[in-house]
Image 1 (spheres, rainbow, N blue to C red):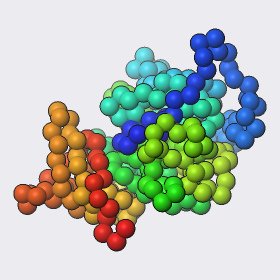
Image 2 (cartoon, rainbow, N blue to C red):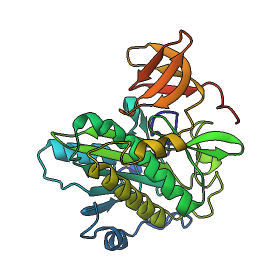
Image 3 (tube, rainbow, N blue to C red):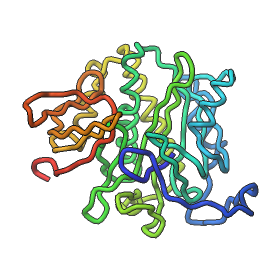
Length: 305
């Protein structure tokens, strides 16, 4: 997964022509985008006290989320903490089944298996937890401050404009199992961006574009937050997840339009994220209404921006 348009982990369209479809690209085609070292990643991340239990890096696939979900639905036993990383994705899916592809080794395209031992009605916090973990990792590793756009986007400042650099997608893949995917634009150049609202860490001024330490930081940060969250039975307040998400959420305090399933539109000020991870809108009619799903369009900056 990698990002492109708002509210989906979409990414730039760039893939081999038909004659190259079955031939893997050279690992060193682009020296500015070196390949990931799967063996080194396993040594660093697969530890007895860690969430991560298996890690595979593939050169090319349609979608890491689809691959893991299909394996699980076919009955394959995958342990919690199984990680699949792709150097290139050609048919990844965002929210609302949006399709996209991205240049090889231009970002992080990763999905993993989770089996949360918490009440299922709290699973809606998983994309928000992933956003908090990723934002923290990006700040430490790339030196970039990112903001969280509810429910599943990461934004960064590119030339004074708020651009989407990351997207998250969680989907249930069998009883008690979730596949969570993350797409993060790392080294995309301006000419490679598919839409004006897209960005990358490089374009946002990252001091490094090495995906290896970034992937390690993201997975370790997720492990830390996931451990806190599950240890409290998925309680977002006791685990301090709600506090961390609200502090980093750029949607709060803004006038937004929620484009809801079924075609309904709702406009109001985003005033809170509730205990179920829903965005609470204060409408013009004086009613506070929680929104659990939908595309959110930022209409005006938050106060003080």
